[in-house]
Amino acid sequence: MKEILSRREIKRRAHAQLREGTVFRDLAVANLLPWLITVFFAILAYWVMFESVTKFGLANIAYNPQNFLDYYASRTSNTAAESMFEGLVSLWFAQAVAFTALDVTRGLTGFSAGKAILRTFNSRYFFSLLATWLGSIILVGLGLSLLVVPGIVLMFGLRMCYYTLYDGRKDGARYGFLAALGDSWLLMRGHKFEYFVLELTLIGWFLLENLTFHLFDLLIDPYLQLVKAGYYDNLRNIWQRAHAPHDDQRPDAED
Image (cartoon, rainbow, N blue to C red; front, side):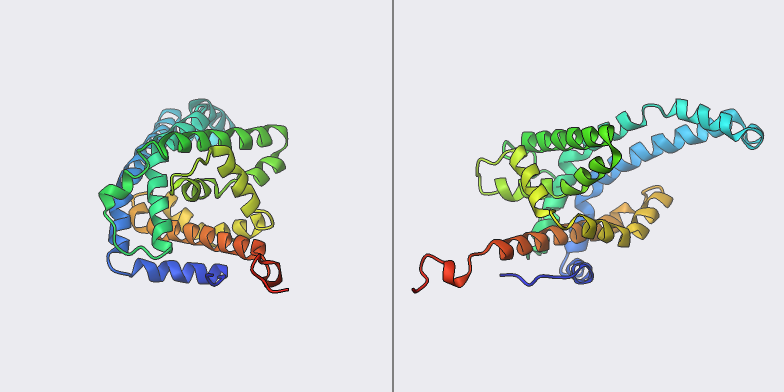
């Protein structure tokens, strides 16, 4: 059974894996299409901001910033819907790369970037990914609408649902989106705050991506994907160890 790693060790391993063979190059190429989708929607968002500032005028903004905020809010009233649409458009491509990053975490060193980006466009993953995406959005949305805290708890509890779906269906087993959501919740039990801390340690990378208008995501995302995949794989190993039968409980143990 694999060694259980700390957050720091997971990140160190991700750095080391990027330097193996052509892993960094291949993951960067595989990220090209998701990156273009992200850049497209980012340009739209920044254009709305630029247009709003230009139309309202810097003098008016300085004189009455609240009016500008109200005006800008009216221009971006569909932001949530646009974010959901962006997530849907990039869903299959982004998760295809995430699954490949998980394979790299588990020892894969050579792969075709072209095949990697299309690996979810089949009967095994296409509709199950869509159902998992919808299910997670509905559950988190309900949690946020009732009380904010349950929504945040659900958000972190379901963070691993795509990975659990991948593992559940990769051998052709009958494994649905409800099982993926449920298994993610089980895996994250007692680890939600730990994962939150992990994301806090990566916040510099997230800020860098946004401050550079996502232009350098191709260079950053491979590392982030390996860290997240590594955390899931480590979490799965922790769960398997916790639920492994003790020697005296195995069917073949001596009396």
